[in-house]
Amino acid sequence: MAPDAGRGPRIGRAILAGLLVAAAALALTSALSDDQANQRTTGQGEVDPYTAGRVVFVRMGCGDCHRLAAARSRGGIGPDLDERLGRYTHDALVAQIVDPYPQLGPGEHGVMPRDFGRRLSEGELDDLASFLLSAPKREERDD
Image (cartoon, rainbow, N blue to C red; front, top):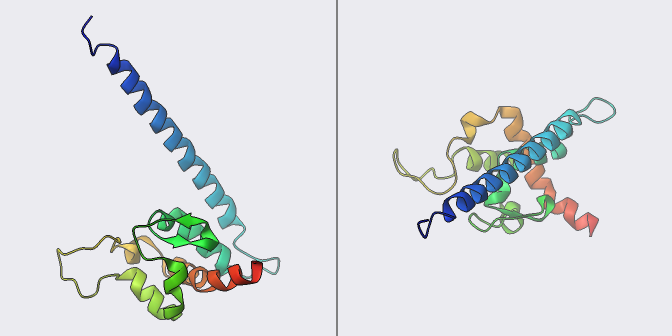
């Protein structure tokens, strides 16, 4: 038996196990997002932008890059949203999400995806901005 012959199956099993864990996490996140999206309205039938925006934040993976206490996210790639959100109005935040690098030309890019304007509806962008802008205020009240 070759010295590395036993490693192939173990590496394959490790990769398969990792893929299964990732698939389970994705299924759980999708299920939670669907449940939360179904609860998007209050008892009076009004849209709850905070909950709907939190669903968008989770679904789009914003917490992978950004720290935000209200979402229990600890991403360290992008700006800390707990520190930065106070600088934005609703419209300015939507504009920042849709075009995070207005100074860059075609073909130039930063870390944040530049396609959220295509991937999210106007309503989802509004809900996301509403969640982000009210999240720090809710965290202060909950403490």
